[in-house]
Amino acid sequence: MSAGRVVLSGGDIDRALTRIAHEILEANRGPEGIVLLGIPRRGYPLAVRLAAKLAAADPAVDPSAVVGQLDITMFRDDLSRQPTRPPARTILPPGGIDDKVVVLVDDVLFSGRTIRAALDALVDLGRPRSVRLAVLVDRGHRELPIRADHVGKNLPTSRAEKVRVRLAEVDAGSGFPEDLVAIEGPEEAAHG
Image (cartoon, rainbow, N blue to C red):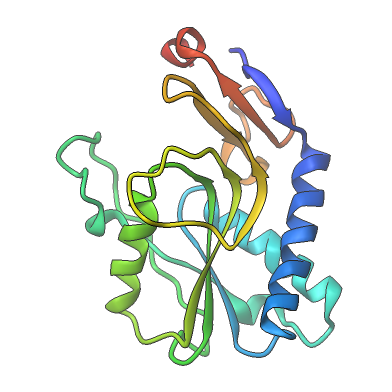
């Protein structure tokens, strides 16, 4: 199984998350009221890693109290086109999201439709003070007026290419020994 052209190694991903954590703290003027909601599958482990980075940068942050998971399955506009997938659990931090600065965390920002679904899902859960978006990779090709506030790497791609994010927490046992982000051309994507 080919990884394609690797554009971010595990070390690159770690440095990008460190930078994003510092940007989040700076934009918020500290850790007060921050909640990280990861979008399954790979957004949640990235949110957990970001929470640890926030705690390393500011000892006032309790990583277990600021991270959660937001399932968007039933809010997607492509349910009829995608293979059936079971919903993940939505897990809110103990303090909930009301009047919090919610940072949605995902691996790749592409069309913007996943984030639109996440915004719809948030409405059912409470009323945040504000919502921000942190992504590991922004590959462009937006179909909706959505942009990320915090980006690990802007990665211009063609629509025919696939961006694959591999994380140890999700992809262990899939033949990739470490975290990476790779671009696959149309030929590789058909076989991957």
